[in-house]
Image 1: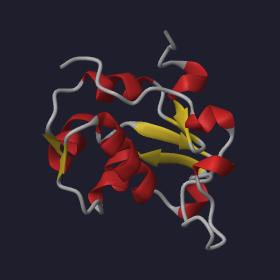
Image 2: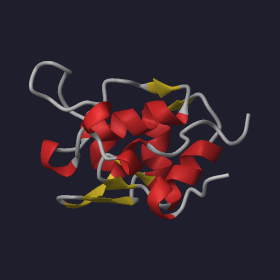
Image 3: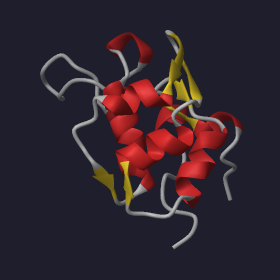
Length: 115
């Protein structure tokens, strides 16, 4: 079984660290407001420096999440383009997609740990 620490807690240039495990263990469904209240002060390491989880989720269009990977995607979508590698853009339109992302960025399990 892969660990949520180290390389497996990294996605698209963002190091989630222990937040990944916390999001996988969290009880779902959960609102963006609840996540901001509980984890908002968490610092994400990005290629452009540290960013707070709160700032990534504040502009999120999704208000309720059913799965940890939905939270991950909202975080990635809420960060500046310079902080994320290989997540923006549509295939065929000059943007990157998962096929262009380094293998480590696609690795890792973002499913729930507890049901």
